[in-house]
Image (tube, rainbow, N blue to C red; front, top):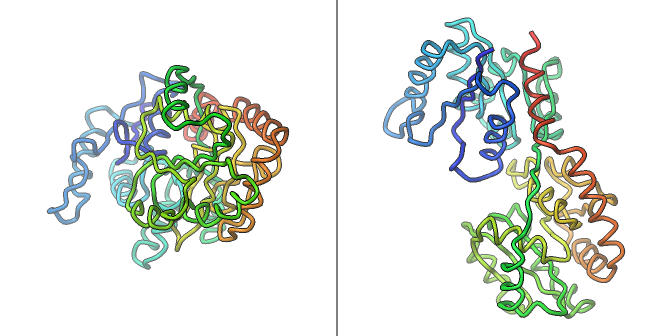
Length: 356
């Protein structure tokens, strides 16, 4: 069966969604029968054309005819789902839709988009939800749909460069420090502001704990202002993949208490699994699709992301109980290795869409 991945986000584009699709293609069981139509050269969406998705309609039609595509995997519900739905009707093709979370939640905010999104989903062959929370949202609105499958992201094994680790230890004087780490975009839903708010209480009990925040984003100034009087909070900006792995090895535990802000939420949180692969426990916000990535009390601690006291208590617990850190970190590693192999995840998608 000739399959086409039709997506806006694809490497070298960065992010969890692009990573999901990169691995979908990499581990596809029929490597000679999958191709990709993406927007990396701006060929799918044009800002000064109406409708903006018209170029994607023409591009997808061309791909279907030239490559004799049998099945389309739609990477974004809107606007690409509209294009796939129209052309599937014209050429009698099947299509499946991948939902990550915010794509569906935002489509429900306006009645026109909601009607269109639900129409696309009702006519799809399969709906692949990247987490159980988005499945819940879909079934809440469309309870009669039966073609829904949950396929979480996977994880690949990586090792840290020991020289980079040593360089970071020296640069930041990390000897005899407890390292708490967040790696993410600097946006409010990731919860760095809540951790910063909890830091005075944390440092009362653990004065040698230092909080390192890696990444950049639109809320950097807001976060820096919030932390301006705290000596143990450090913003280290954007980091390379190699530095990321080194920081995950260096830290004692990872924290990212994400929250839902008016439908803007984390669909999964692949970085929790990346921390797990480094045997590190995590503190995660009990929101969105995070529960698929973190098992509270088993691989990490789930907290109310709006409760800074709970965040502080969880941080103090992990900072002062090395045996708890080891137990949770080892369980996280075992689960990541066992349940989140990309090969298994993509086989599940392949099986779902080839089931006629």
